[in-house]
Length: 196
Picture 1 (cartoon, one colour):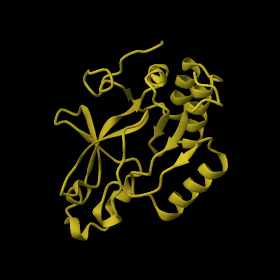
Picture 2: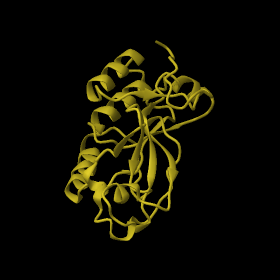
Picture 3: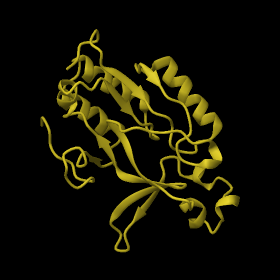
Picture 4: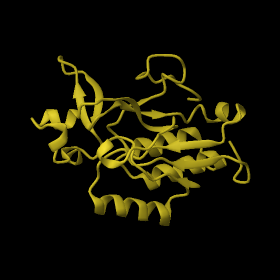
């Protein structure tokens, strides 16, 4: 893994979800005080009512798949987009969407469609470093992001093994499935074992 003196940079993307102002404030105060991230991006990436901002690809978090002109959150509550009452705030990690037969499928966040699984590119970090990638984005979720960022920072610094990171993430997110299929040219929701 990269040494701390190397150029690997751990970044935190903007919050995708419509969290309550006090939750958002406390989240960023906690990140500022305790998270070992080098760069924090703040901005809106989802709803035009909240000033849009671009979100590049990342190594951790739900994957943004599409943006729609329709607000699925509002429609699910029988509301119009223009009078949505910001119902997306009721689902701090997005609204789970299942297929008709009950199979977990996607996550909806207002006008945004996200992956149900959480992207996790930890086994691919060495390959990414070898390819010259030096910025590793964590996309916030409604979990202990300080612990997530500490785990990834320790992995990048060589102070935590892949197994150690996976144990940490399993503790933080016991009911969340992980994926890395897009990276490997496979089904996006698949998890391709790397370094296990």
